[in-house]
Length: 604
Ligand code: SF4
Image (cartoon, rainbow, N blue to C red; front, side, top):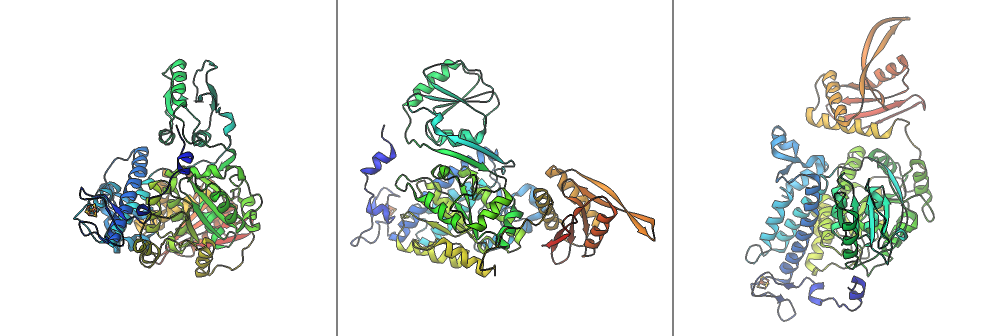
């Protein structure tokens, strides 16, 4: 069997495909647009045909991603997305709240432009209907529906739970054999050695998923504990079979031998991958305090024609103090740079400082392309924490060095719908009008656009920083708090949810009780602590305050006086740190006090 690379060496791209100028949407075709034939038989122009082709590709990509995401999340429902601000009383019956995934300003913009997806399946069906002959001949209409559907796809991936744990693994494909069939033993499986196969034991899902991408794993033999669905899904993209412990070793060996001849593309790599849990609070502080220049999200399938591109891009970004988030299999091309593990040359000095103090590597691997939704959720939390309204204000961009799979097309358009500008290095098969729409109109309408071929992502990020009035030079990272950041983030997020649901004007006890409920949901321990009130050396009364694990005392109030109450509570108890939350008419105010550092910090 020949590999992609061997076939590509002899392959010539069809010139009609390059322009998206060939239509086979009906039996009268295929129609090819040339200087002499400027329309298809049905009257479709080159722009209509180009938009149709892009739409069909995006629909295929969105189907692939969303089917996997919905089956993994166990959510096969056809519920609609909605904004809780509009239909709050019906929240439970109505479905999925889009305003939990995107900033309110983005939701409002999408609603205004009728780009809010109902649900991904509905939008795929609508798009495929529109790109049929005789339904919608307008290039822009088709492109808007394509964007709406692609957003639905990215949001469906956001239904998947985020990784709660930090993990780090050493990966080396040399443990796999090129000559013999490879069997990975995962979990507590009984195995009888057999010289015909190379069997290795793995105990980390991250290692397993990464080794799978080598294309050398023929069988995964696992125990009764079901494998993560995501691993099965990745395995299905290769020739790899997953077999449970109910099978005998002999059956596993037979399957591995049978599968070995089906290997196609093979990658060898070696290195360490660190998968830290990212804190939106830390990233927000790093961006807003100019400890890092910006964040670039790198995605897209590997194109065998662009072997070293990702490595070069990542090294250049790291040298410019830009933190890189990676989703998908492209991680394998940079695994041996060491940047997934620790800041090594040529990382910029500010990024290095930030990485060393936070333990975050300069390039963070978030997981397979199903983690695209996790990036959207993370950016949403950063936007909220920074109180800057929308993704389009953040010094953040998406780079797709290549787009081998149609899934990359739906990701690109879904990111644009979120207000994230995208740079795609390899050519897109679209004509000039569709390209103009993606490069210009998208910027004017949805504030996210396809960066022109020669545009520099660095310049783009610098422009975003200027608009936010961030310092022109970067500064050395100074950690701001000794409070456990993760728990503080969780409490702040819970306060945002309560504020959104209950608004202002209720008594402090109502908000306190609501917070206790939210904390229980989040698995954080809380209790009440009595704070004595002294007058002339005598205890004259007691206040009851909330005590939360790792975050200290949490004081809740309706005005700024709560900050003084927190200071008194800290001096009246043996606690040294705490948070205050003000449910004000104008805004939600959150701050903390850390007596160990004599620091007070407030935010919105
Ligand atoms: S839909 Fe129109 S352009 Fe496409 S193949 Fe049929 S006639 Fe040709």
